[in-house]
Length: 310
Ligand code: ATP
Image (cartoon, rainbow, N blue to C red):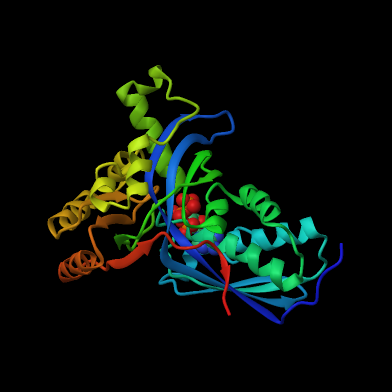
């Protein structure tokens, strides 16, 4: 294939996400659970810069503990770059520089955002010229959350969460995020959910292998009414995440006490997402939680997916 003339460096910004609704069904033979989820991209971003190189390398900044992010082929951004190179038959390499803001292993899809950003950055750097549909297909091979990080906005995810359809969402929603110092492993939380379901006898009822997002969630998003949305935000993984981290329940209650409309565990946790009624209310909740020793962040959604900057 031919490659267009390319710039010396490309900077891409990709958002973290909240699952404002997450229904988890039964487990397929490939180990993945059936999901019906609503993703919302929020204004907490990963910045990935790609530069020409003979080999593939990655550096990471913005994390408290560098040991939490692998710098080899386990790094999702590195895997994204190599996958694109193979698909495009590109013979060079790339030096990727990742500046992280999304908490690592926080249930906000930071690694997936890095992968989406790396796909867009390398596509532009190498002049690959792949279509959005082709990038989406590669993204789905990297992980269930990667297509959404490309897409951004608000979207319904079904299947493994990777079959995306845009959701109509009016206006802006204000969230206060409360990250944790220690991450939670996604497989551990899903494993706990299976164990809890077995204990409760739910597996005997066969959780469905295909799920839909309830209509009231979609209606609330369309209305742009945070109060209405607060009545239907929900996460099937919450009980399992709280089992691993019982302290998170206190965080949710503190947030609601400070004025948030509702709070949920984001994805597999441990980040808590508190939905607020306005930017002012979110500011107030953030201040109150900070006074109580938390490290909260005020973000808003929806925001666009992976984009070239400058
Ligand atoms: P998941 O997408 O599995 O729900 P998450 O959103 O909770 O994960 P991530 O920050 O994406 O959390 O990282 C999960 C794990 O993936 C990390 O513990 C880390 O070992 C590994 N990982 C691979 N690549 C990256 C990356 N670029 N940034 C952060 N973690 C990465």
